[in-house]
Image 1 (cartoon, rainbow, N blue to C red):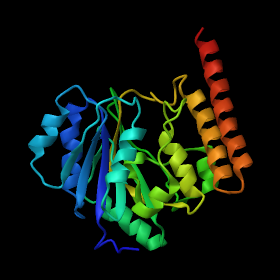
Image 2 (image 1 turned 90 degrees about the vertical axis):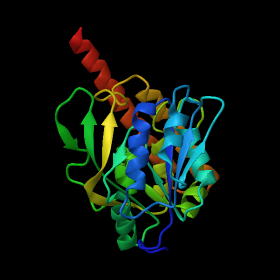
Image 3 (image 1 turned 180 degrees about the horizontal axis):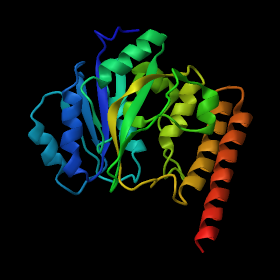
Image 4 (image 1 turned 135 degrees about the vertical axis):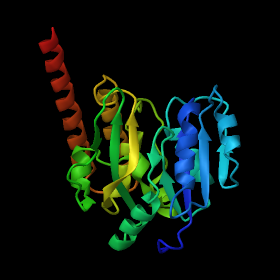
Length: 270
């Protein structure tokens, strides 16, 4: 495994019509104390000025990967970025988020200390319309074991770094029917079959939410969790991994409990 001082990191930034925030994300990647070897801007057929914004950065490490058809999900742009990456490690950053300058050094050091081919971190959460900035993980564990991930996706995509060979061996982010959200969760579950996620406790990501609770509070969360359960079951079977049935049961239980809670809340509002 490469030491943090010598690790070549490819940063993958999926984007769609975020010209207003894209430059800040890119510049936060380029400003790292551990400089990335490349920053891959994986466009999803944007119709705004995103291409112009990227060209204006003027850094040879920044590569624009265009698309002609919008996929409707960050999964396909991320997959194109992983396929194009030349670094020994891949770090993910969403185009509406930013990194503090020590982020890459922090997650690389965390991975090295644990002897792991991956790591994730903590974040400052910025909710739209809310003046308070809070920590994403209030009491972050030193590792996120698989048992924890089966109940709750505590992994922030913009905080993840994975060794490239390990990431490619786990397979792509799923893009099938039903994955309106949680396509990242599906990949973290696969990776957790091999090794737990070491966690860098101090927030090094500025994570922006367009609307408070937008993803988890909408109807889309239920079918997406069920799609995740089915995808994980099939992946485990295909790759000869034990425990698939239990994993599916836990994910489905989480989906069912969430649906019940939302039904109760709707009844109370009436």
